[in-house]
Image 1 (spheres, helix red, strand yellow):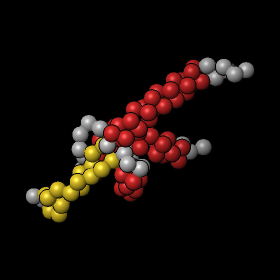
Image 2 (cartoon, rainbow, N blue to C red):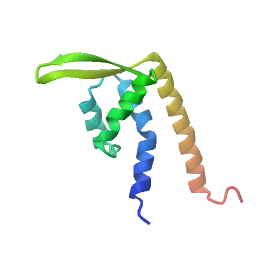
Image 3 (cartoon, rainbow, N blue to C red):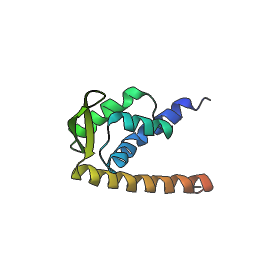
Image 4 (spheres, rainbow, N blue to C red):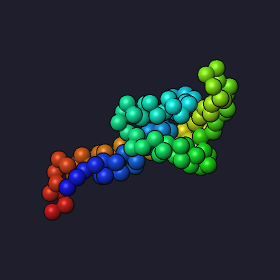
Length: 113
């Protein structure tokens, strides 16, 4: 059985948390996010990021500002909102709980017998 699809789905599942966390450290331009996600081997396809940023903005977790660029057209810089900070904290907590539960299961697969 190939694991590529499962690994891709796992990455997609944590992408929202990772993007919110990355932007919570300061404003980010999408290409910065793409570079960081690629470096961390988290980005499945580049076309995944832009719809995700739009969903997070529409949910009120991110906002953006257009800025002039010396290297071309204006750029969109994203920053996290207070609601986004709250969501990022909640997602990190949920992730921590999930990791703990998975770790328990992996260490003792017969736990429920």
